[in-house]
Length: 110
Image (cartoon, rainbow, N blue to C red; front, top):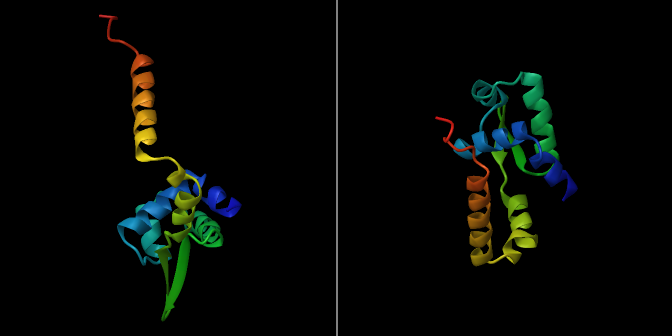
């Protein structure tokens, strides 16, 4: 579980997961086309995602395809998130929005 949270803690890795969600089964070259990272950085992030089992790879000839594996995210949901019913989550979201609105700068400076 620690590897999973470590993998999700980085914005670049979350962006890689988003790209795989949009189009699953991409090569390293294809992933690099959509990201503003060097090939080496993408490779490093993919290794961490694979270690956390969020990405699985499959060889097809000379190509190595990367696939999103959502099962570990389901484990997070089952272990922590599902404990909160939707009503409580909605209340927390409403409270957050209200607090954000109260802290927004006003346009009274005109």
